[in-house]
Image (cartoon, rainbow, N blue to C red):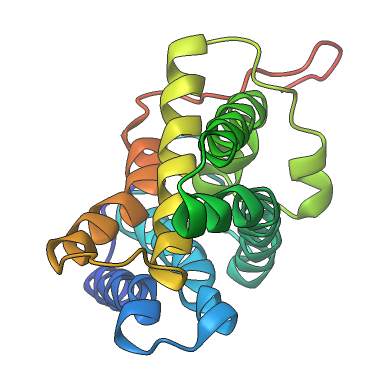
Amino acid sequence: MPEPPSPLRRGLAFLLLLAGLGLAVLPAAWPLGLVAIAGPWLAQPLFALGLALLAPAPEAPGRRLWWRDGLALLVLWGLALGLLGLGFAWPYSGLVQTGSLGAALGLGAVVGLAWVVLWRQWPLFAQAGRQGGGLSTLAAAPPGTWAPLRGLLLGLAVLFAGLGAWLLVWPPAGLSSPWWLAVLCLSGLPNSLITSFEEDPIPTPLGVLP
């Protein structure tokens, strides 16, 4: 069992989490167009590192290179948000402007495909949040073909966080203020799920000794 965090470590964790909450809704408070996606993008590594400091996983190394873990998380979430935005932009803009059936079907197809991809790649997010490691470590994580329920839930949480971020950047007309509270909850959902796993979610690959 990991030792309880020290008061200094706990205070740093809460500062990271508060900073993440502020950045998660930056597009709503400071609408800058496409550039505003930087807020939700930077928020996710802060959430992951804050929760790792506050409640370290049992299998986490005793000493982590936090700068390396933060960089890997930035790249991982940058790819997730960037690819989701590229697939989301055209059908979403068509749906908002015309409300056509084709745009609605296209948007549904993009969301469904994204969920399947995130289900396959959920170990990357679990590895980065619980154990850390550089980009080479994340690249070696096996695809998530086991624990289907866990993978589907975490993939859905990442998908909701990403869609919520893009809807803050490109809000539909008449979006009410309670939506910002919903985005706050959605933005913290992926890393909260990762922290709640009771055991190491990444199996040891065959041929690799512990």
